[in-house]
Length: 248
Image (tube, rainbow, N blue to C red):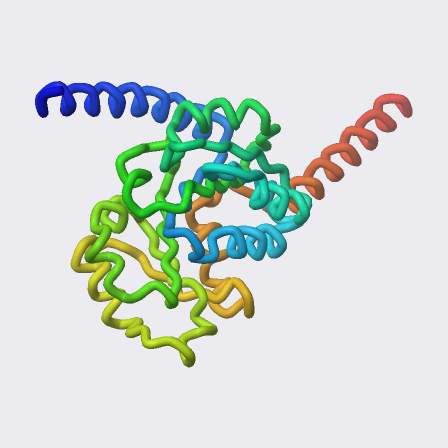
């Protein structure tokens, strides 16, 4: 196969994926859903971060998860144990999720308006960078056990992301990792990249991550408790109106 033919096939694949991604994005926007594409190397702590996030958001916002792995449903089971709905997508030999897979997975989730959809991509810092899933933001997660030069080794992923979460910072006293150098490398690739330092295990920095989520969801999104309170108040007013009509 010639190089020209290979390029044409790749362009065709990405073009079809982008069409599915645009359809997903329109669906999410129409229903007020914030979709995030979480990407990282294997072992960065994505699933632990997700479970900690879900636990802290319980009662505030509806959260659903799509789990991408080559095999097993282990991560989806961990998510379901928190009470959040999760769909497992196994890619087999594939090294990333694509927009068509996500669209199918969404059909199995009862997504609620003003909710959060967390898409945990296959652990890989190469392939997922090129595939739009219809997300509002890519979030790249890097743990302090990996080495601070990851942004230079995998520049496409850090360039495509809006936020970098530096995870497992509770291990900094025990590893040789230069935080400022890592952030400098990442912003050399992407000057607009936001950075948060978090420990999913101890909870350090989680409040900043939750605040980032709130800002990304925007002012139109209201916590679940507020929505329920509003519904109760509407029901009370309707009952009062009905009584007033009957008393005439």
